[in-house]
Image 1: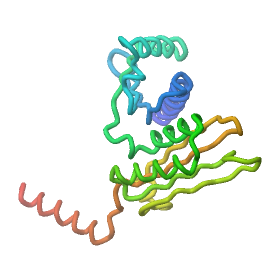
Image 2: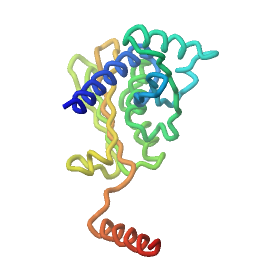
Image 3: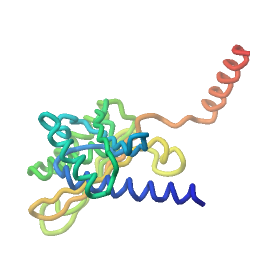
Amino acid sequence: MLMKSFFVDYAVRKTKIEDFIKKYFPEESYSKVGLERTPLGVKIIIYTDRPGRIIGAGGRKINELTDRLKEEFKLENPQVDVKPIEKPDLDAKIVAKKITSALGRGYNYKKIGNIMLKRVMGAGAIGVEIIISGKLGGSKGRTGKFIDGYLKHCGQPAKELVDYGFDEANTKPGKIGVQVRIMESVPLIAEDIEEEKDKKKESKNKEE
């Protein structure tokens, strides 16, 4: 029961901290926030495609964020670490943020949707789906879908292999939502799974 309570508290705190950081850096793109307990306190890790924008000149932004987190969440000795994302065009949250940022600057949704579709596939994705919905011109809400490659939509492979991201853009006509799904690798079929098991078995026998 105590263990369950610990994980529930951890998940709630992590969500609150992530929401706080999102509001603190509304214009910046980052993928996720990690939370680790260390002997010295709490370590908060921000994964982003633009570390310099988050850190700020001379570490000013990150120092200010650390002070705000300490005050807002009563954290003892919080440490904020910023880590770069090696392949930002394969990160669904980063891609969604790039699209909403472009929409906010007046880009046509069809143009930015097709541009990002090509960039994601060019980065090595197996499949990608981009859904842009809201006030896309005119008085009525519309939805634009941009799809390429192979993508799982249900089952365990979809949960394990498909990265999901969502972001919103506030434009003059109204709010626009952007959903992005990216699959970087294909699910193993039954024959592949058996082959992997045989390889592991052979490797184990050799070690023995």
